[in-house]
Length: 432
Ligand code: LLP
Image 1 (cartoon, helix red, strand yellow):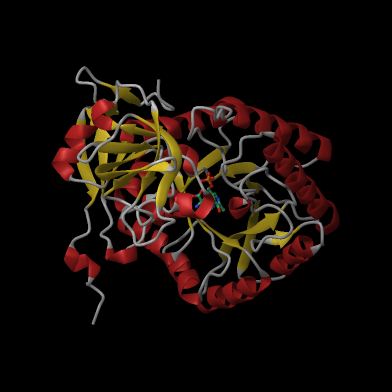
Image 2: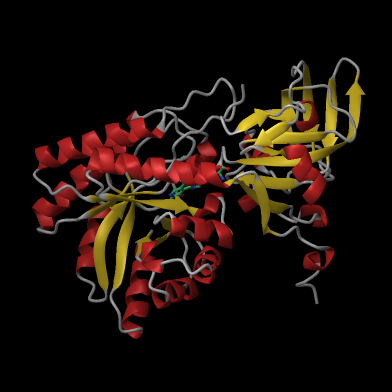
């Protein structure tokens, strides 16, 4: 009935998530509110593990891309499932440290890491620093030397793949600000350089071709390109790379018409490509890391709003204006990302109107979506926007000095706050 099985309608006709009535959540915690289904997150992580076991002899590790959703409790959850993290800033690293995360299972990304960040990563025993460019490599070599350690790194490479996704989230092609290009020889030279550095241990190579990708072929092709590069390095430099990080990017279902391939199928097909290519190229099968973000948390989350007003503009459109905005969900204004919405307190009724859900920011483009099927909504109704678990809370802002909403986890019919709603004093807390 809905885009994900964890959403349902109860006997009162209200939308539920993970078995919990969303109208009760809105009444208890207020709106806007992010709600995440803990069991779905855990089950999804387990499905990734299982498929590593099933298709790749368990020689792999899942690193949740924390940019999709990061807070202390999420880091604790990932740690409790035995998985790793992809972190992209000192803020994400700090959150992991404070959550007691095993930092040797963290990969530290970023295309312009500061010296402070590099030192912090080394100090806290981050497993891999994923180096993006040569200036970073030389700064890292110097910092590692000063600190008397060898920094374990991977290189971020551009495999030159067009991943058929929105251009703002494509990253694997040559014209990208991330990483070293393989086809220009830049990546090969970087490997040579790293091998000559005393305080650098090159342990692996990384690529990430983009986000919200539905096709499997670009992932297979990226794996092939990376393995061919590993073979080239082995043949020319006599150095065998033993770890390969294939990034994230698995597409999820935001709309009824989306039909993503279950990620077990990606895992099966990409594992098969890796095994076959390694045999063909005469290289050892690398330990594989993957970094899914969206596919782990998106469907697990919803956002609850209260409708404030309804504006019917004859022959034009109907606006339903909610108490949230682009400050809690900037994805429509950035990417025209589409979502399904439901009137949570009328969830068993048909969605027979087409509306624009607008936010409360002083900005005409502040929309959650346009032309969205919805039940007849009026002031006071609770509007649920589905599959907002990824890149919503993590991309939220205080635009118009709006307070960021709370995040609530639901599990076994119960709910608990994992991130408090910001107070008015939080809004001015750094002002002097
Ligand atoms: N690894 C690296 C190096 C990445 O840059 C990303 C995402 C991921 C993994 C996780 O990708 P995922 O599995 O979540 O697709 N803000 C955009 C998405 C930006 C993705 C950036 N990098 C959005 O809201 O759609």
